[in-house]
Length: 326
Figure 1 (cartoon, rainbow, N blue to C red):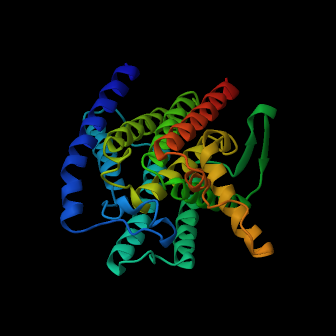
Figure 2 (figure 1 turned 120 degrees about the vertical axis):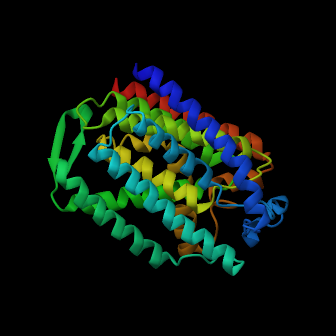
Figure 3 (figure 1 turned 45 degrees about the horizontal axis):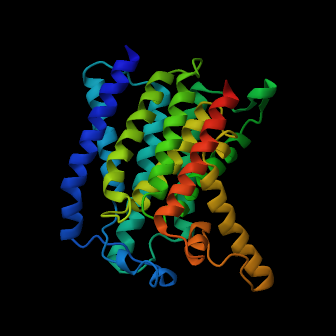
């Protein structure tokens, strides 16, 4: 029965995503909701200059509509933990939307300041923590060791770190056509499988369903986002996807496994951190360009080949993570 519902939900979300893509992209073009390129990418990404952004609305809206349809037909119920997932999903989508809006309005890459973004994410993390504590304990689980550590209020800082790290990691990876989207499909399918086998979690089936629906919606989005992209997801999509991955890993107590599931996101983020601090210390760059997918471009790789390689690495990481929990 559950498999039948998932199949139906996945089909609905895919068709909705395709329909919304065909409907929203012309609107984005009409109002010139275009991507602003970094000065460092104007040579290699010149053809992308007029590509519309904020395409994350496609999979965000299709996911929410599909979940609402399932609710109206009593195929799912609203559970407390599902509310937390959707709250984070929408909250980070809103932060990304505001950032995208300001960038478009100002015709440059100056959206929300780093401080403003941080403050907004701290507020969300605090709300998340307060909601989380109502039904869950502030425990860090080392499941392979069957070890639980209660860290009390410090768990709020842990949540903030996970949300910041995951949301910004996907955001940094969203630099090539289809890269972040494809990796997110792999990650959410993996999280959906893992969540389904987390039977002790209240609302685990609904959260698992959400993962599969979102993955299907992103697949529909990828029809328009793979090279050559007709639309970019923007911060609206990337921040929402990353934070939601982090949220589900927290609820299922697989925070550390997220490093393996999102191995490419981790590599991309580390390349930026290494580049930044190495340059501060030495005034030299260790990579030709960061995030590291741009280094591959500088080395002469074709964009499609880079994306395929990174998808493969993400798939391997996800397959290993599923084997780890078995």
